[in-house]
Length: 162
Image (tube, rainbow, N blue to C red; front, side, top):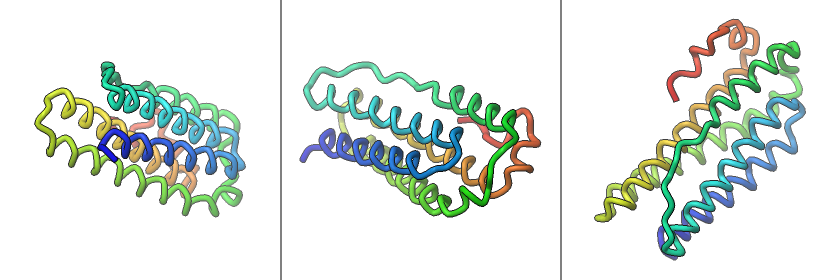
């Protein structure tokens, strides 16, 4: 299995995991977040498939954070979150964070190992995307753990620079 096949499988696994979390999540806003992450993994898969097929495409940054910020605003406007319903899901959210960390670590390692400037650029771009997903999941966990505190920050400064 070459590196692109492995990356494609990782992205497929990530999509399945996010769709599973979305299905178990009670809150519609959080369902949207996890569905958005699953959709992102599909796009990553498609890009790696193109590289595997030797038809590389430029890697562009996603707008996932703009979408997610809007979802958090919707959650706030709808009165927040039923924390008791989401608390059991926190373990799944943490597993997702761990998977994102493994992904960005993997892509950074592959970028360091390749002699191809093109491949290096692709792996670093995906490492950056996976780090963004990691930060997003950190914010979901914070949101579930402390919804009132989290929502009080109208500028979403706690989300940091993705």
